[in-house]
Length: 153
Image 1 (cartoon, rainbow, N blue to C red):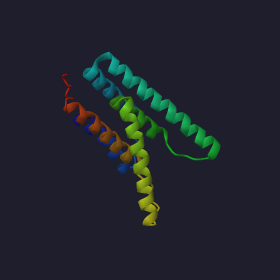
Image 2: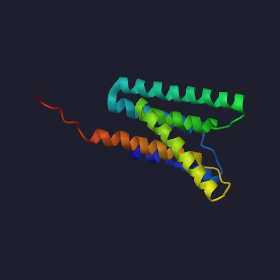
Image 3: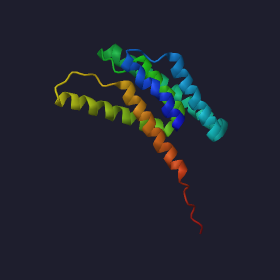
Image 4: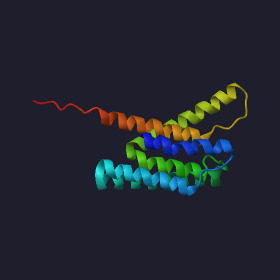
């Protein structure tokens, strides 16, 4: 968990400096997530993380392309899609849904607050996505700390 937070720091800091997160860094972030999956759950967990990351990459890419082509909406950039796919490698299938829900809720909340204050700032999407990844990972790892008692009949 601490490794994930440390690896997400450049994603949060680089936009403040006016720079984009390199794709190679996002790929290495995803590879580290797959390594953690493998070390924690073996080959099955590695495959689950890889399939989840690939599914997020493909599905978000398709949805973004369709919305941009049909409605002229630009909701996600390539970097944001790659960041969510790299986070999916850390989280696995169930917590990816949690991450995506958090991204949508936080984005709408920041936009609503901006409308109330009548400011025209854009939500810092990299910070929102990184926060959602950390929150989903926290939830994932918190449950693994508490063993589920088995009822003995």
